[in-house]
Amino acid sequence: MDYKASHRQIFNIIFILMLLIIKFTLNWFTLGLEAYKDFANIVKHPEFNPKDVPSTLSTVKKYRDGLPLLLFKGHTITINNCNAPSTSNPTCQALIFP
Image 1: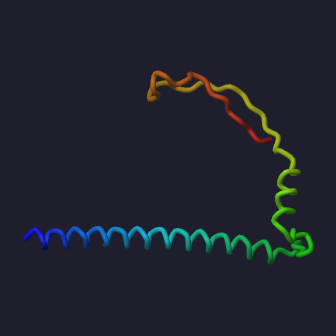
Image 2: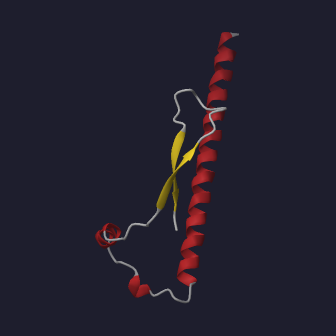
Image 3: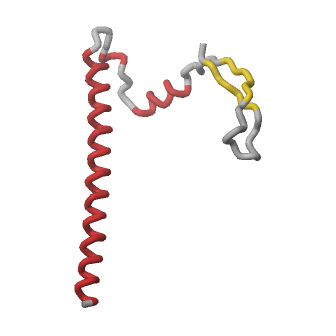
């Protein structure tokens, strides 16, 4: 009797692992498909120029470091403490991108 129960437990564990593998594989496939759709939209754009694409990863890193930061404005807002923990702050900084 114990022998059959252990086989059933092993089967259940393998089944759950297979379901997890399938779930993660489908998620990665969906993410890859969305990234490819975005890439295809960029390449098909009439203003796309292949000469503007950097040829090496180090060039991309140099461009990234030289990008300007987005400007934003901030102001303080009050928070309703009705459903908040007693240790939370009554105010918070709200950021707005103009």
